[in-house]
Image (cartoon, rainbow, N blue to C red):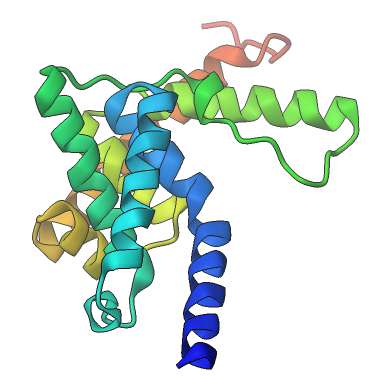
Length: 183
């Protein structure tokens, strides 16, 4: 029994280490407040401790994101508001800090991409974040968001198409020294 409990604690600690930051970022995007997001994630992990191991269904990411999403939406319903974060709150500090010029380059590129992503409708932003930031499958996203797998695919396809178009337009406008051809 004690060995089983130690294993459970280890698994719990590993899940916290792996998912705490992505869950905080996800909840913060929904609630619009990083501190509220931390509370939501703390409640999510408390529920994980109380949950039966078979409830995880061998897919802890799906379970954690689903519970986190539901709790964050409950907070928003309670407060009757739902906003999305600015890019500064979404950026997470890395453990291995690159050189200052690389940090600046990365920050500018991330900011540029986040500004483009922020122009998408909220549902598209959510599925893009779950897919690319958290590496979840269409099926897992479907179960978290309560959308069909096909709807998730359509949202991602539409979002990526829109992002490509907006990125190309922004990149064209950004090139300051491009030679112009005369008409």
